Image: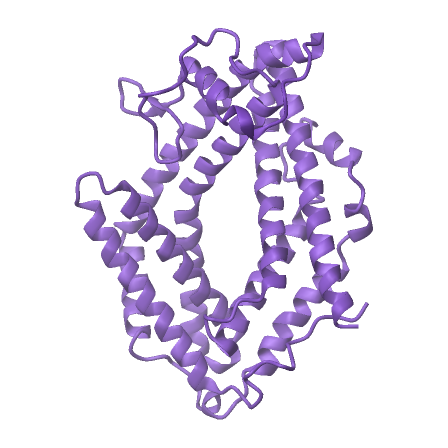
Length: 386
């Protein structure tokens, strides 16, 4: 199969010089400052949680793009400034992403437990649903202890598991079996355990983000971005240099990383080695996942480089589909790791451990499905270019 290359039919047929790079960075810096202003305004308004979340997402989006662009086109930028700026933007983006990641992971795991248990109402849950209960922005109920730290409620966890998805969203409930009975009994306790752990992690991530946004380190980053909005420190050569070779180098790093992936293994629906590692006592990250995560990062760098060359309005549907598959891969692998970590909790009931084991296996199957989806979208793209 031939490797992908920059589309020769792209309207940018001539050299793309440093002016395009400077314009892109100024636009992203302006987005960053606008998001920062919205975040500060929303933070002081009552009931503005949604606005704060949107502003934080916009901050992450612009910070990621600036950092990635500094990485891809670093030979055309002031070296000292670029090397100081990139890690600070990466720190900010990563810090702001933690709370959202915990929130999305909890929702994903609770929905999976509900689907796997196949019970409309879990044991111990009163009939009547969840109407009228307060929830967090992600739709996950929390209660607060006396010291103000958010923790999950066992009752809330069971009720959430029983109402996490509408009845028409899944297949009919399978007939009762001893195994399914054990899973249903353990699912409520497993859901409550996951809710306690991930809600606490989310609360800590929220506090960390607030501290970061109020720190002198963040203010230094914001000052540098403000300067970037008006002046981009390009090298002298950047005014006449062509950006396309550097963008092509980012693309080649991506295709090399993809060629090293076990795409044939990704075509199989079951990967026993992945399950064995995930349920082992070793809490280290799954060794099979690392190269896929690296491809996801390289694909993002490639997409952002194309944005510099072609403008924001251009959306490559093929790259978008591949990126979505890799995002699902990341989400499922991290959810599986969270389930395995919860299963290592001391003195949990056997039914709870069983439910967490089934949940872990389900999320590892989701990992394999995402790898297969990436394989299909990526190879469809390369076949077109042969």
